[in-house]
Image (cartoon, rainbow, N blue to C red; front, top):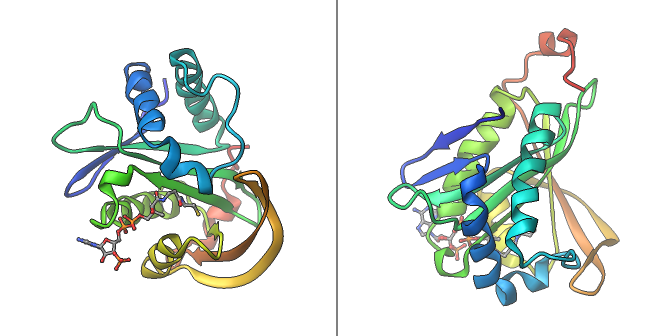
Length: 195
Ligand SMILES: CC(C)(COP(=O)(O)OP(=O)(O)OC[C@H]1O[C@@H](n2cnc3c(N)ncnc32)[C@H](O)[C@@H]1OP(=O)(O)O)[C@@H](O)C(=O)NCCC(=O)NCCS
């Protein structure tokens, strides 16, 4: 059974368990309008409990297969209340050792440095435990908050991709950024990859 929980000063960041499904649904319902400008088309059934029960199972399967690390954020004092998520997908091994990062936080929790605190812990986990060399993160030029957050975490701008993702009803340009692992041990490249 897949399990991973990281704690920070104010947060618990965890692979979701079955009993998180209701709180995950509550998070997306509360934040429908807040997340709309930054999200792809909403999948069928997004606002149902069954959908989130499937998401919990898929998170565990993808984690065990080494394909993705999808984590959910709760306040340390209210561990049953979901206020955000962080996902590392498209995990590649071999000479690339890379992944793509996505994240979102409850509108009521913005502007308090909580996402930064969570990402500091999860990026460290991806570099030191998952042994990746690069984390890529891309944002729409209009998403100034996201750009500031990435810059504060050490992500560097590497390029601009026109019509990069289908977001909020259209193909949207994105700024491409990444951060690399200063403590990457090249001996890790000889370890049997998970995939
Ligand atoms: C992108 C997103 C995660 C950024 O969230 P955020 O709350 O601005 O990010 P942080 O948690 O790091 O907060 C940083 C802000 O809190 C402030 N802050 C307050 N206390 C702080 C602390 N202890 N430490 C750091 N920052 C603190 C900072 O001044 C900063 O504000 P500023 O950038 O205006 O100066 C959020 O806007 C979001 O979820 N948006 C919708 C989904 C989305 O856009 N996802 C990303 C797609 S690319």
